[in-house]
Image 1: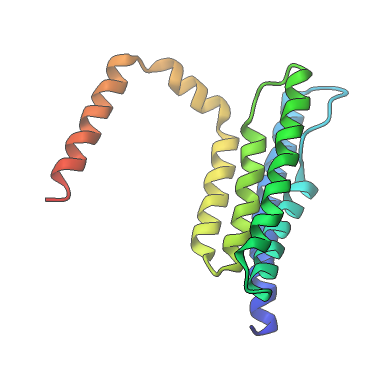
Image 2 (image 1 turned 90 degrees about the horizontal axis):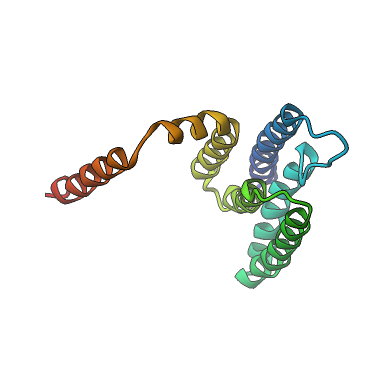
Amino acid sequence: MPQHTLFYRFGVALFIGLLVGLQREYSYDEEDKPGQKTFAGIRTFTLMGLLGCTAAFLADLFDSPWVFVGVIIPFTVLIAVSYYVSAKHGEMGLTTEIAALLIFLTGGLSFWDEMALAVALGVITTALLSFKGELHRFVERINREDVLATLKFAIITAIVLPV
């Protein structure tokens, strides 16, 4: 693989992690929790993206998907332990931990030349994290009938569109 292609793939993984990490830093500052540390910020999310890309690179280099699996399993265990510790201190949200796993995977996608998917997942993740308040307010305004009507529409669409 040409060197510039390798740098490009790692660069995409780096910037996706940077984007999500920046959002998490900004979000944590907004929540104003003095004395508490965030699970992961700009540096950690950037490193997570690079770790995913590096794991995919090594899996490709050694021609074995088990290398990627061998990195993602301990990474997931580390995230689970972090969640457990946070939950013991009364923080019940799992969003940042799920985002961390997703950023690791986007790093792998970046290496495997799935740039559009990796960037789309990074942008969607950042948007979902950024619009927490708006999404919760939206959910408070809808009722059961709205959900059922949307579900019926989705079912009808799934049946009619393929025809």
